[in-house]
Length: 355
Image 1 (cartoon, rainbow, N blue to C red):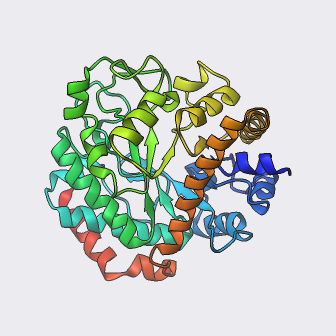
Image 2 (cartoon, helix red, strand yellow):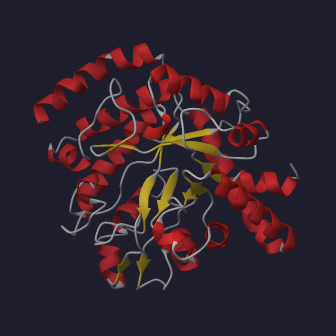
């Protein structure tokens, strides 16, 4: 593996099919040429197998630069782990209890259990504002239909995740709550003016600056910003998120295999465009061969163009900084202790009363 290939891999988080780590991923992890992995239900049989899988991904890591082990565990319909990991309700239902202490406790208990398994980053909280009843993908994943409710409860949930030992990642910048198209299937377009975006969509992200170590982009076109999806828009990532909002954390793309992107660009092109636009970590959630092609394309572009290599090095720096933040989190408990913790039992009782 040459230097540029390693540089390219260090800005990628990859998923894979099956319940065992593929040889390619094992090789990249051993060479520290991938930032991390993302797990889905397809990777999980039971807790013992999951622990062994995660161990196989982290056994060669540098303790000072941990591998990111990521999951989408929001609650409700977006939860990769089943019992005995705490099963949270949809975030809207959690927020409807109007108890910020409960929301924080939910994040804390969930994070302790995830961290005990080896997970160290949760793609949560959702910072989208649920303003469109026809939205097929956000809906009750959002904490509420007003920015105020979303801000209060999303930040409380993120605080809980950090207390429990897991990094948070707010999503989906610059806002996916008012779409009527699922970006897994097609490209949504929002036609709100900038004033409306400031009042609603952008408000939770602005509030989360300095509180959340990572954001994830939305594959959504906002007409007021640009004619291309935010994931590959310099106007969205650099001018708006970095310069206007002042965000200095790591920026993940949403999965580049989603149709909103893959129907427009081959992954080698969308990943390159996302890096050029200011994103730091590229998500390729299932296709290992496609991830390999993307890494090769990034390395080749870095070899041809010094400016792109510098941008790639900046992205790697932010990805590495995020990985180092794992070492500042509370250390993991044993899974038995995390599952039986008094706060876990108390949370279960409170959640039962919400049903």
